[in-house]
Length: 396
Image 1 (cartoon, rainbow, N blue to C red):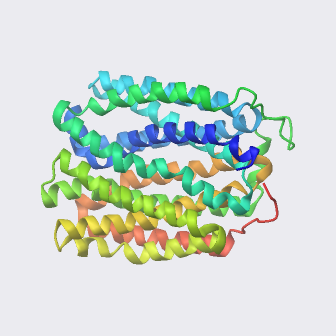
Image 2: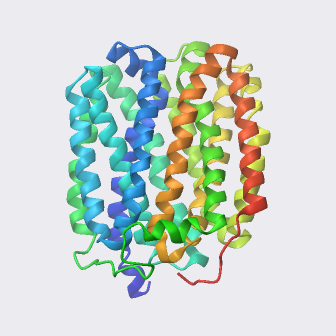
């Protein structure tokens, strides 16, 4: 391992812990949304709107990106973890909808700050030709949150009540903050960016590139397709069709977490060899073909439903994770700004998907969800193939 590689060990370890903690707060919502709704004393649609409200915090990334391109990334990372710790403590202490919403939204905002800032930090230091491999490793906390976080949360809910996981997350947030203070060097000072003195100059540079705009639409369609299905399929659908409780839903998350881990591993293993754009396109087409299979597999019983969910999560995770290295090199002079622009597409997709999903499910059943999602996934593939140009010339 070279000295430059060695210098990345501590920030990568600190990032992995922080991202695993924040991702667990996100993963809790989908399988346990009906339980959270009952704990708050609100209908499922109202609880789903809370997810949508949290997702709107993604638009704050438009401020985060330019700041991360000009200021120390370390400062923003520490702030994000501290904000998450406070937000999860509020969620653990208050069961009144309005107060719980404050903590819930704070946790969402913290993730929006942390994700693009840590990705930009690592991408600054890893060549594009290796970025698919490193990014796949970097995204393991998303699967870990499902493999470990969701089952433990299910156990804690069954034993101590629906707010217990948030108390645990507050403790983990504090630990993550201490590890980040150790892991990210104080000397990490960002130079002044080359594209202008005004903080918004990076937006102009990025948005003038057609590939940035079309990649935004690609990501929007992909994430909206995913949330349209998973907002109901991973929780409410399993609960209604198969009578699963909190602990059982947490156990199902192990299977889906393994599927996501496999998707991240496949992206890490092959993306740099096959090409980022080609790999994403293959994942999108496979996902569009697999989506209509979910209700059919669910008709075979619980095992079929879990297999169907795992297959979809494997394909979605591969496609989505593979997008990130491509985005990091679309405008390398404004890397964090470009990532923040694309993050708004992810959040917009979550907002629209989390609102549309329950309406389709309650109105026409899961078949409507997967049909709409398959159409959006195909549209994402068209946008990517037609308009997004992969940039490979820069070593960083």
